[in-house]
Length: 297
Length: 297
Image 1 (cartoon, rainbow over the protein chains, first blue to last red):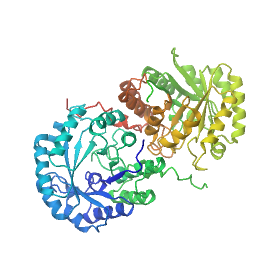
Image 2: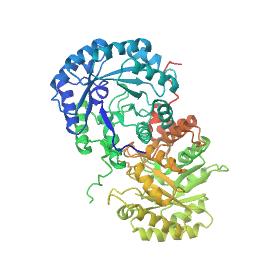
Image 3: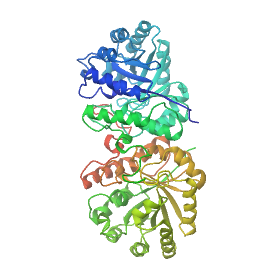
Image 4: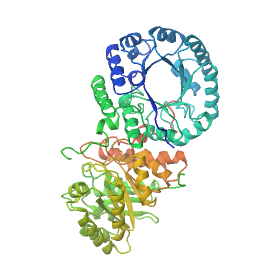
């Protein structure tokens, strides 16, 4: 049974642009504005991380300051630690996203600390955030490129710890494209469907996984305009589920997203110009199913 | 409810190679042999068409003659007309595939005759084929790039006419990637699930459509090793559902295919060498979900 509607959080300005050559804060703010104009009501606009560690995310406060804020839109920012949370809250974001991993090795590689230490960071961030909600993204929730299979029971234990630390929401991330509909079902059996999903298309499975999750009633999805993201060393290959690809599917299967697909495709084309190559999205490349052959009625 | 197993017909040697620069018959026969060695039990090996019209399919009889035949394997060939059927039957294939379209305009463009005339051709072919089964592939069954939406009732009327003409089986084709799970459901409501599906990945929806069809109990799928196929003017963009991508999914969701994924990926890599570029399949590009990060356990 499909939900009547889903809420998309476009992570393009953050997860999408993170592996790219740095783009000026003004252009990143412009991307956010264009997404909101296309109907997105939730956008991850920046990451308050060290500009030495992630040059493409430099100027996070400038991005947020440059935004014209709209009622009913949630402007989120990724924070890796308490210092990042302090800066993001000072900038005035509506939501903090925080990442920790179901894979110890991935956590060490990504944030250079054990998962237990990440949970302590999360607790400090939630305390500081007060009324600003924290959404914790659990990476490698459907498998790890290091340890291999990840037991759903272990993910569920981590989800409980994340809520105990004060997180308002949890998003399950398929960081390296290891999920399949069976893995989605197995984990949702434990977590229930009040979770977000953050899917990567490394192996071409992002859309089928989103569909399987919608059949289970999941209503929150992270997507990135154009399908950017993933490894900077494999452009177009391991990116996020493209916002336009999910909107295109939802439009035809009767799941409301609030997003205007034509407007979004214009944003996606503009973004391709910004990053200097066509974006990976297949719908961006070939147009929606309603597009007719050239010269035909 | 997923089926316990599905039967894959690899159309790579035909639909996959058709838009490519011509490959020698011996290499096309070798591709068939490698697919059979990887576990495929049904392969579309050639098209008995005019070599002037489709240079890449020249030498169809040589391809069939070069094959070492294996028990339990069905070697199929596409025939566009009665003359093609005569040649294919003389070469000794096990199944004929014939294409007509749910779109009048597409039928005119593809075979230069109205659908009614294609049905007459089909009748002649079935009569000639005798005990050799004919599988009729109904193209544009989920929409047409010319007329737009195609009414499932009209497709069903055509399916009935196809059976009346003597066809043993019917395969519904999403020729230009216009299907979605809803379109799959709507058409299967009329046809039942004893049909084949031939899906193209133009808009990244081939896998989700296959999954939706499997949930409805469909057990026959056309796929192409590497995901080749589609327009010669948009390489890697509009190809067939890649055999390895469907096998990869089925392996993890518990649907038996009989195909050895590692062996198939070796075939796919070999095929990339044959066509001179990496094949479009995402699983071929990134490896199965069971692959670990380099240097890790």
